[in-house]
Length: 277
Image 1 (cartoon, one colour):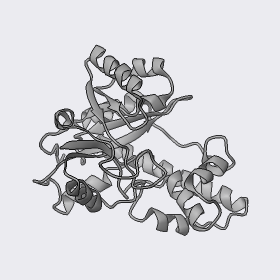
Image 2 (cartoon, rainbow, N blue to C red; image 1 turned 180 degrees about the vertical axis):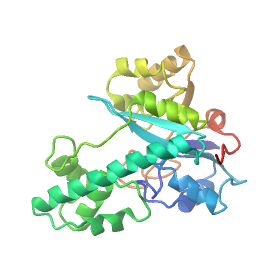
Image 3 (cartoon, helix red, strand yellow; image 1 turned 60 degrees about the horizontal axis):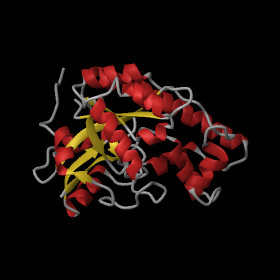
Image 4 (cartoon, helix red, strand yellow; image 1 turned 90 degrees about the vertical axis):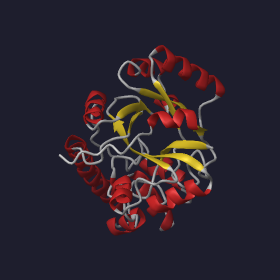
């Protein structure tokens, strides 16, 4: 048996509803499932408020993945076992969501100015239950209307940084994210350190976080050995996950394709961390 501590639902940019993701995890025999939607806890709150969390057949670990401000590198921090109702966390997420909506409107206007027959409603239909609207939703909508053949092409030609429809967005600072996750009772993990693209920065961040995502689909055996040694050196918790989104454009196509041991996953699992302040 095994676990996957890095997954996304349709409440951010995944394609599985939270109930579908949990059902799929149980079907393949996962013992631990971390739900770590981008910039929102709506997915895990949906499970809790509809009586699906906790679940006696699988350990569901409430989480959130947040992008941090950095001029040159992609820094993502994941908070695990957070209080989904913590006031400081909700305040930060609301601020990020507002910025996402502003960016969304700017990107749509840019696309329309460039004669793409795309409307905000087209993207909202693609996003479905998600309030965390991002470029992935826009890319999928562009593919749906036939503007591009794939999500990757839409990013490469229009939405990626440096491309015509790219718009910067608000990102909290690393220390701000760490503080808020700790205030919400959670543990902070540096996600997919190889994608940071700067091992010197990764080492610096290891002095700030509680854990390191050592196991990740694009990490080679050499990467795993290196990040394991960093975790040991800095006394960090070790985690891992597939970054499952349920779409063919990601590193894995199927849940269960990439997992970690129960021994590692269990360290992030505990009773629900909820304080209704």
